[in-house]
Image 1: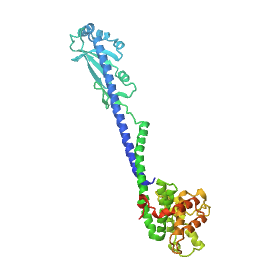
Image 2: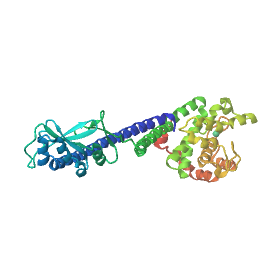
Image 3: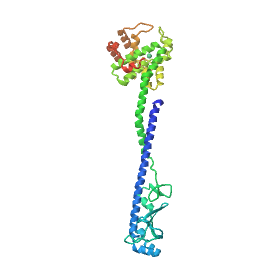
Image 4: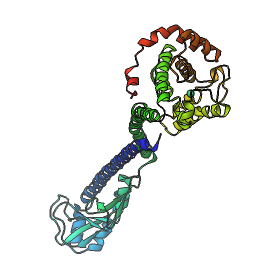
Length: 401
Ligand SMILES: [Fe+2]
């Protein structure tokens, strides 16, 4: 595809792929947020269950409360020595001076550490000891490891996101994976491909109608006679092609190639083309270069370059006597063989500056002698009486000036 028609689908591909990738990144980011939420909830629940158990097991214990209240802190702390045996998240506990929390417990975060403070109460949950609090260090890292076992969340002293009880945490970014990128590219291609095809169709349609019209107009300016001949050959080729079973794009391509079959004559001096006498050997050689020149011209119009072989081979003959390649039989594209029949028929039965028109019967006899495709000549001869009433289809009329 040419650069001009590549630009639109390429832009669409990039925009769609980048947008899809951004959406994938957004989905990853939101799933990261959800992951943090789930981890936080598990962490809080583990901490609260621990606090509740420690409160009931140690800090609503008459003996501990009474020892502490009577100033025997060492003895009270000795009772807390086995705390870590009963509670998997408890590291250590102690009684210290300070204002006890007003509720059953309070969490205190410091850096990445988490403590729980308790009031000291009797076994009925009353008689708070004033000026004293039980403090238990919780294993925050272990609680987090169990709430987010993949290690995606880590506690940080600062700079993280709000986590639980005033702690900060950092969540590992969930990077875009190869699958996200592949999927984005595939969606980009899926959207861009039809756009590309539409752009290509549009360009081809332009060349097959408007562009073709322009080329023929320019051809006409340089050689009115040849251009008139080409239009007749186009119509005749279409007439023969339809009856030979060609349809759709193949028929349109045949018509375009027939219109352009002599475009290479642009490179032949006009006085040679219009000479009312036979050409000498050198002049004949010059005129015979026009199929190669025509193919070269079409090579420069990518939208028409697929027609180049039809133009290049329109002077080949089924018996191998033609030029430029001396191809024979099926080596010559069907389209070129149809154009050749239309070309010779039009040349023989049309007016020429150097002779009058030839009768149909004689024309067909000459055509057979010239090595043209016999089946196509027979076909044309059998149907030629229908030709005067033949109407060009609407799409072909559009490319006539
Ligand atoms: Fe020709």
